[in-house]
Image 1: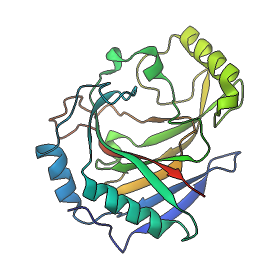
Image 2: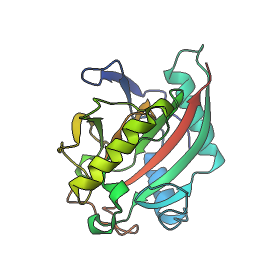
Image 3: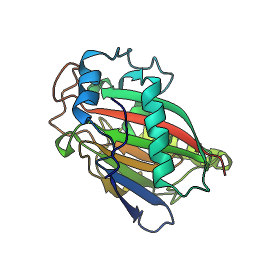
Amino acid sequence: MFSINKNFTVSESLIADSEHKVIVIDNAFNDLDKIIDYANTTAYFHPPGNDGTLYPGSRDEMPAPYYEAFSALLKSVFPSSIEHQVARCWLSKITLKPDQLSPMQTMPHYDSLLHEDMAAVHYLSGSELGGTNFYRYRKGKNLTLSKEDEPIILEMLKQHQSSKAKGYIEQSNEVFEKVHTVEAQPNRVVIYSGNILHSPSVTARVEFDKKSANSRTSINSFFKRLN
């Protein structure tokens, strides 16, 4: 069920005014319909927050064969001299409605403050349900954040809370500038540094019932670059 498509294609793009690349892999895996069927009929989705993160929905950890296939994809995309260690692969469905979000869930987030940590989103849904947006913190001009940026992070959180933003962030606002977008396509994988500010795009067509055909479904993977 979980194997890479040897005919996948790779493209790269630079985020504006930065040296950070976003890697896009299309037609990444074989048998996408079987992966979607697994998501709809076999996976057990735990309540929001059960994974210990602020992800606004339900998740289930992918089985070992997906880890193996994802690791094989990384080896095929990156030079052989670069090694990676996969930490988690979460099957994810956004289930919280905009009025159910906490203040922290209404702003862009980072997955890690370590430069070697990476993230990937494997879209099972199409562009009609939203891709991924990347943001820069206006005041500090920060696209990425690190452990040394704690004062900036605290100021950013304070400024965001003062703005009283509601719902999923989709566009630039007074605190954050949207600087890059990757549109979702079924079986597309996007890879980026985990310390970049980003947020899922959640369109008006998304239904927040995990059993709905219009639930925004993806596999979110986190891995570390070892060298």
